[in-house]
Length: 106
Image (cartoon, rainbow, N blue to C red; front, side, top):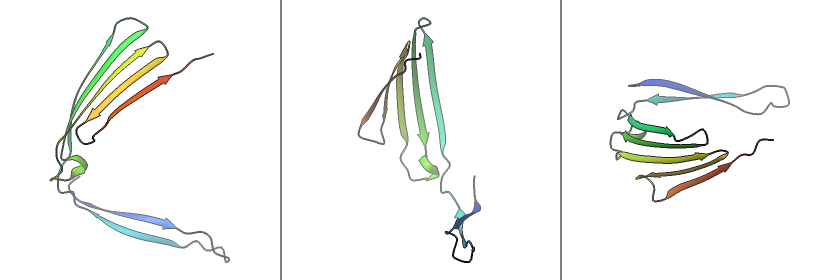
């Protein structure tokens, strides 16, 4: 998107006469940059039970803001039967995210 207009419509609760008041808020859309995401991903099935996945993403002008720094994020995942493990990291936060998901079907 290079430019445009958008209207948000907000409604309030119904008053005692059954009238709903609607307020429109116009918003100008003029991004200063253009976000471009470049992603490299790879998945390998070692067996029917074991899969490893990796993703590396480079983002330029995050959120379409020209002066935002470039962001590099990565993900490494492991799936073994019903157990899923995931580890992600990005240079825009100072923390590493780790997720474990286990599902048992009956």
